[in-house]
Length: 165
Image 1: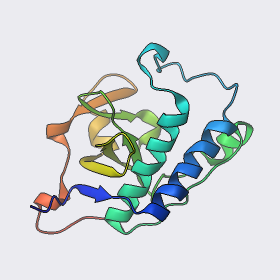
Image 2 (image 1 turned 180 degrees about the vertical axis):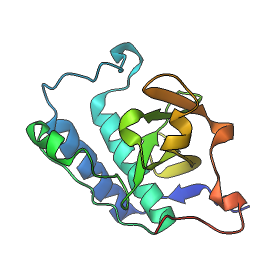
Image 3 (image 1 turned 45 degrees about the horizontal axis):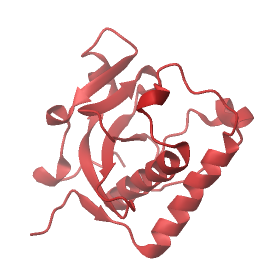
């Protein structure tokens, strides 16, 4: 049976997105983790960055939206942090172990998609759905909210898809 939330990554897509992830990793060598990261619960950055890039690519592919695949030096991050991962207003969060999708205050005005890798090579990406960040942030009293999967919109279950285009 065809799973509409499953995105299969082609060889050339895999190579490109993996290269983007590795370049992001090397540009951040020596940079401190954000305060909300727990290093004990994290996977190696080389794998995590590649997996995150592949999840971004999968969401872009599903929505037929532009993925800029950006890589910039850590010192330039502030100049570009307003840019969405996909299209003009889509943030992508790779989910590895959490029971929901993380939405941060900096995501206001965007839609946040959740995605996870289904195999150890990151060739099959499952889309988990999305939530409007403004709606998600109303659910909590902090600048970071974890939205359980059951509250995400799943456009493959709807009559039409809202790409925000």
